[in-house]
Image (tube, rainbow, N blue to C red):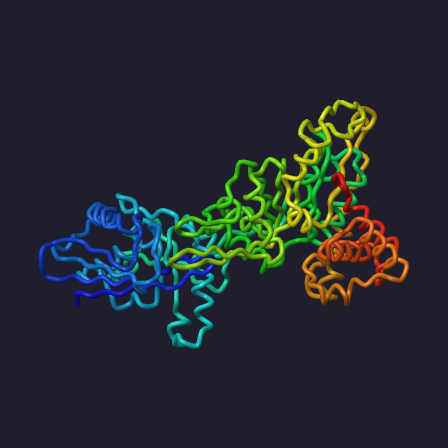
Length: 513
């Protein structure tokens, strides 16, 4: 037989569609041809594979080699197809057994010496293989025996998918030995991942001196998964407060941890040591729109997706390009991002909690007790208007953070540790999940009418404030959701006037509010 067919997978957003690697040896002038919409990295595979085969002691068949990556309309990228291409050539030339290849899937980049190098997206590929096992189109026998052969460096990551049979290898020779005819040839062994650490360290709120009002606001934000904007002079502690928010959030569920790890895997940055650790992403203000939401000729996840089920912290918010900030509107509402290209589109999850920080004016000292600010009112308004009204409308909590005096800075720590606050947050979040199935920030208008309706006094206070401040319908609803979270923290079934008043107080950070 001069034809071999092996299974692998491509990456398309969060999906990992199957790819058949077909290798055919034909008579004619020796040469290599790779078809099936390969990109530059895939086309260069012939040079890597040729050197890897030669340095591993195998013969290169002096025939015309055609490699087809099917389906032909699915773009193929990266070096993950090196291993199945090399094995296909060996099977088609009868240097290894080809009759047992059907039950395996393969992925791995080859070095010139034949070593297997790590790849991106191993977790997504393993998860897709297991999900394919539940499809009705595959035979039951094929599903029960399916195994995934990949580089050893990706084994711990792929083994997070419990149902997947992961067979790691260091070199091409180890993979070939697994398919050798000799009964005493060493076989690849199913990989069992290391014990995953459950204890996760985050900076502690007890380190923050003073700022009791800001700490309370972040507790409310954590309890209801609300977005938050902190406005204050330099050195007030805005960044310090934001960095400690992940320590207040409830522990990630297995599904959340796996989904977050899969996104990290697509970017090539996942480590099993970070299992169940909520992401904290803090991109610089020079970040481009593509880097923030994802993109590229072959779409990859951006910062909003890498912060999935975690925190996205944007410091110096007005210094970001306005067009970059505007791309946050859709994921803040929908929790996902769709990147469309001419040939295809990719969907990435983006259910992050936005925490932003900014100075109140260009010099930063507006409202400071020192009176150092000399900014004109027009300059202040121009600076604050760098954040558009529609984006600001989508931020639930907008809070001024005052500078600390020398007395507070010289005093000892006066706040609760994160572990104590996290208990209250977890209890409030559990109430929300039991009541409606998700945090309060995700409520739609119909759910707001059902779960967030205030009492008569609270309703009158909210209506009067909304009329006086000319709130939009979105701002009105977001204050109601924050009030519902305040009530949950207080253990109240109903939203009272005190809860509404506290929620209103969390929306007064900028001039004109």
